[in-house]
Length: 102
Image 1 (tube, rainbow, N blue to C red):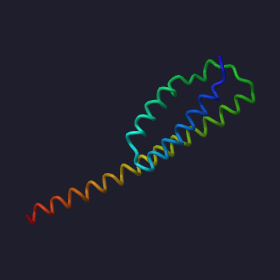
Image 2 (image 1 turned 180 degrees about the vertical axis):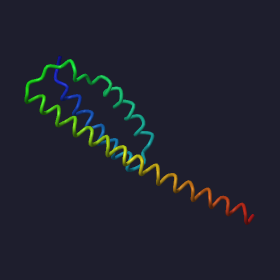
Image 3 (image 1 turned 180 degrees about the horizontal axis):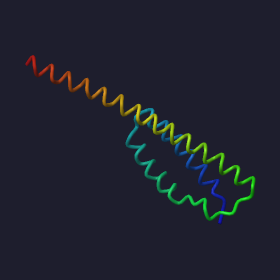
Image 4 (image 1 turned 60 degrees about the horizontal axis):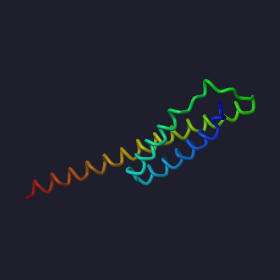
């Protein structure tokens, strides 16, 4: 079986792109890229691969980086969600106030 490193590097690049998209609240593109990334992630099989010690270390480092990016992506999405909820609450309160004085 071939080395998983190219796929892991692709997943890292897509994760970095997702973080950028999430930070700019570009949710349509973000959702599309996430579907693509998830499909690739499901094909990643590290159990049935024979790796040299050096390749094993590279895979381990790359996977740790991917996990860190996923954690960062989750935090960015949660922050954006919190901000969006806050903005919606303000709009709802403004709408209620307007109706109260109408």
